[in-house]
Length: 300
Length: 152
Image 1: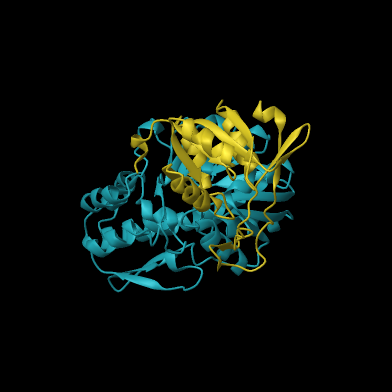
Image 2: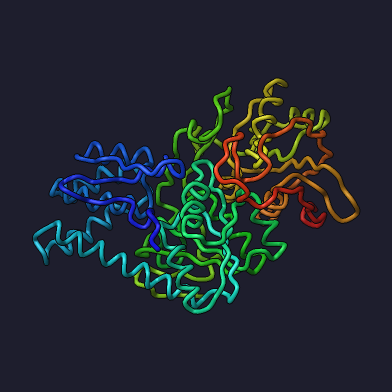
């Protein structure tokens, strides 16, 4: 079974349809994107993110027939993500195949196959009875993972960290797992330590927005403390990476979102001042294994 | 507020007592109040501190790791509920905060906290500010024991 989040952005009749993730789990509605301004609005308001923003980038390139301009505009809106690398990827395929739409289709279809393969490879690493802690949302890959675990007769239970303030864990991951009848429980972000101490969790799986060849990653805020705690409790911590590069991760700009978004989902009142770094950095020394988009595994 | 505007903060965890508030007033550091899920106790604590003339900065609990990593937290003031010989009992998330402080070599000062006498509408991660997402979906939020060795 595929999660609606596995392909949250689609392209049809010169229009991009974006699943509005901010409305989930209450409504499954799609926003129509017809030009660059629409795309940037959707991106800036976090209507889609992660794999969704990759697809949005690709399809906006198709819509406009331009790549570099789209990449620069997207990067300005969400500075932490590597849109410039995606632009290079598109141009690479475009050189061999001048029809941009066809080139994008090849890339996107390749992703789908690779993500399923990666889930299969990861399943082999996990315990026979996996108690998996996760944060934010992996766009359907946990559903693939569960299917892959079942295929090799392994059991799994997911503990989903709610992921304040946007609650992507609750609204997206828990929703997609429940929809697929996969055993899962929600936890407050701060419950991770006690569950690790009580041995309720035996592995952690997260995604990454950026990664380098040393193994350092940038991912949704709240990832780093999970890695630090998992390391302390000797619990394996696995990361799904995209294209690790030779970069100094500390030099990448960590996006800070508007203060009012910290109080997302709370009733209106007199709120205090707040900070909102949207991502954090996890040094590679706290990570047990990396699985890249080609399914290659590197473990310490 | 941007992260670069923050130098060092004093992190408050739990419900401060009157003595604790005096302690906070004596301090020159910027006060950091986490959300303290599921109860959203942080909103209440920020309000109490404001009434006492103390301004604070709010962050969600999952942001604390990054703030420790960036050396933005200089000390933790942990208001516990109870103690025995080997442990301090604190609200949900106390182990998370104290362990992260220890792993970043940030000192923790433990003080007996005030009794929490407001009824939060949220008892676990299934709701936030009484907004229900999924019924019977969450792990129960409980008070947590923090080993004394972490505090030391």
